[in-house]
Length: 408
Ligand SMILES: Nc1ncnc2c1ncn2[C@@H]1O[C@H](COP(=O)(O)OP(=O)(O)O)[C@@H](O)[C@H]1O
Ligand SMILES: [Mg+2]
Image 1 (tube, rainbow, N blue to C red):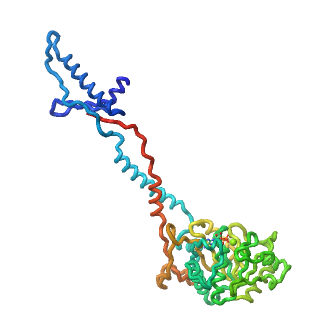
Image 2: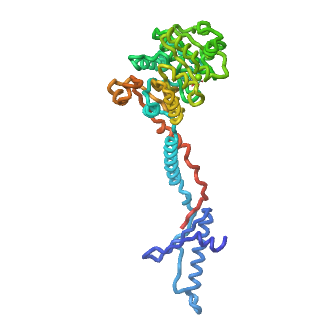
Image 3: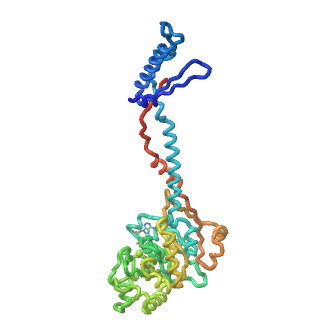
C-alpha cells in the first residue's frame, strides 16, 4: 500500500474545545483497519515525544497518550444493508410503476367500451367473454346452457332485435379487421342464439379463403356458397341442416381462385336474396377487412354489419382502418362486438345490465340512428396488479460493494 493510499484511508479530526484527536480508518478488512489505527496512534505518540524533547534533555515538554485503542468493529459501515434494501425497494417500485405506465401508454389495443364506440362510431351491442371451451366446440348448446357466454349471446340477440326497429336487419355480415378475432365463432353463436328464439336461420360462410364453418360445425365442405355461385349445385342441394333445430348452413364450398369477384357478382346478390326470402335471418361469416376486400363487398350488400374487436388484441388503428373500409363502400354498420373478453383476473371486463337512463346518458345522441344497446359496462384496470408484479420483478440486484470498516 502506498503512502497516498494509506493517507486516503485515514481521517483525523480534532474535537472542538478538547485536546482529543479522533482517528478514523476505513478499510476493507476490519482487522487491518484496527491495526492501522493502533499503529498510527503509537507512531504519533513516538513522533510527538521525539519532536517535543529538547536536544539536551531526556524529558519531553509535552506528550501525547492514546486515550482509547481501536478495536475490531462488529459491523461494516459500508455497505449499509438496511438503507440499500430500502433504496432498492423504492427504486424497484418507482421503476415498476413507471414501466406499467409506459406500457399502458404504448398499449394501443382496444380495451374499453368508450374507445371502441368512438373508433367504430357505433354502439357496443355485445360482449363475448373468453371461454376456453369454444376452442374445442365453437358452437354453444343453447338448449341447456346458462353459462356466461350463452347469456352474452342471448343479450346480443336481444340487442340485435332492438336495432332499426322499423326495418330490422335480417342479412347480417360478421366481420373484423384481422384474422383470429373470433368472427366465425361469434357468427355461429349469433346464428344459434337466434335459432334458439324460434327463428329460422341460415349461416353462410362468406370466407372463401380460409373457410372454417364446416370444420367448426362438422359439416361437408365440398359444396357450398362458391359451388352455388358457379352454378354447379343448386341452393337446395348445398344447404346443410345441422344438429341444432332452426339452423341451416351454407358452407363456403370449394376454394375458388377469385373469391372477391364471385362475392361481388350479380349471382351472389341473387343467392343472398333467395336465402333472405327463405329464412328469418341470414348470418354471413366473412374475411378480415384489412386483408382482402371480400368482407367489404359482402357488407355493402347486407342489411347490417357487426364489427368484432378482440379485447386487448385489436389495435386502434386496425379497427379505425376496418371501419373506414366499411364506410367507404357505404356498408350499414349496426354495432360493435367485443370478443374474447377476459372474465376473471387481470384485464377482466365486467358488464352488467344498466338502467335505461344510465345507458342513454352515456350513449348520447348516437343511439337513435346507430345500434342501441341495453348493456352497460365497466373496465377494471389491470395496471395495479401488473405494476405490483413488476415492481417485485424489477428490484435491482443487490449492489456488489466491497465491505469497508471504520474504526476509531
Ligand atoms: N369467445 C371465445 N373464447 C375463447 N376462444 C375463442 C372465442 N372465440 C374464438 N375463439 C378462438 O379463437 C380462435 C379464432 O377464432 P375464430 O372464430 O376462428 O376467429 P376468426 O374467424 O376471426 O379468424 C379460434 O381458435 C377460436 O376457437
Ligand atoms: Mg373465420
